[in-house]
Structures are given as C-alpha cells and as structure tokens.
Length: 139
Length: 139
Image (cartoon, rainbow over all chains, first blue to last red; front, top):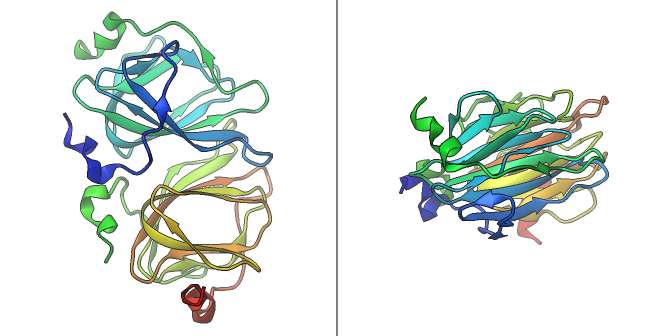
C-alpha cells in the first residue's frame, strides 16, 4: 500500500459506497458541494481502493479532477493509459469517453468538479475490463 | 504551528506570493486550472501563513472554498467571524462582501474554485484591519 494512503492525509470522510453498476472494485464517494444557481458544477471526493476504477463514461459539460493522495490511472478513448499522481490536475473535455481509477498498488483520492449545465453530469458506459485496466503495464 | 501544516500533508507546490495589494501577511497562490470554454471557473491552491488573510472582496459569480489543511477564518459582511477547518467546504455567494484567511496560530491551505462568467473572478476591496481580524476572539 502506498504510504500516501495513510491516515495523516485523510481530509474528508470516505463517504458512501459508489454504485456498483458504474464502478469496478471498492470506490467511495463523499459529496462536498451540490450544483447551485451560480455553481454550474457539483464537487465530490472520490476514493478508489487499489485496482478499483470507474466505468468508461463521458461528461456532457466536462470535469476537472484534482488528485489529493495516492497514485491512479486515467485513460481517454484511443490514447494510452497514463499514471496520475498526488497534486496533479486533469481536465476531462466535454463528451470525451474516458475512465479513471486507482493504480494496482495504491489507493487514490481525487476531488471531482463535475460540470452540469443542464444536460446532466455524467453519461455512464461499459465497465473497464481487466485487459483495458492492465494495459498500462505494457505502456 | 498547527501540526496540520506539516510536510506530509503538502499536496501542491506553494506557488508564488499573492499580490500584497490584496492580502495582509504571507500568502502564496498556486494555480491548478485556468478557466476554459466548458469550465467557467479557475482553480487555485491558496496557502495563508498564521495571521494572514485576504482583503475584503466579492466574486461576481461566486466561489467555492475547500479547506485541505489547517484552520482558518471566514467572515461575510455583517456576520460574525467563523472558524473553518480542514475538510470543510464554504460556498461564497455572488457579490457578497467577505474575507478569508488563516487563524492566528495555524497555517491554512484551501482550494478556491472561482467562478467567472464574463464579469471577472474577483472585485478587491479594503484590507481587513487587525480589529476586524481579531474580532473572532470575542465571538
């Protein structure tokens, strides 16, 4: 287990289990802010246990991820899987198919600022297969 | 110094000194994401040394603060100064005069999601006087 996952770095409550229909492995979600009239986004803290990941999905209005602890993986459709680290910000463009999750040997916590301008925040697609997830080792 | 300010919790580079015209004491700013077509906000990490604070200011389209470490102070015009803690989210409404900063005995780091929908992100006003800053002790 990555030392970045130890207790001294825990900032938010872990929250509730994320819906198994949209995630593989153990993932928890703690909402931090709901969409308001002036904030056209919600903010949540998402914690992925090692090996856990989201399904493939798109955001109709995009999303900003900020990694607060650990090490994870991020892939946009048609591009290689890339490693994302504590302190890194990832801008997910609108309507681009992608997934994110923990690396196999580290828990990962990120903030997700999910834009929602009337078309919803997320469109969920298929699970990320083990073959897709493990493709980062070949990169 | 608050133990929450120790190195194990440092997530982002400290960044550049914030402009002295708009802040009292030592404050650093590290930009994490710039406004884009789909993200109508910028994101920055702001670190206030003990006693440091912003000027009074407003946000034409509001702001979301998420405290990542330490303990700070937050005040909306006409309301008491309140303490804000690691893990806390504060929604600053549009055009409401307010200030934020560290508490006297703790460094404070927060993320600021500053909405900008064409009227700019911030309107800077007067410095927070020592009397205003120290009013939290009387609360």
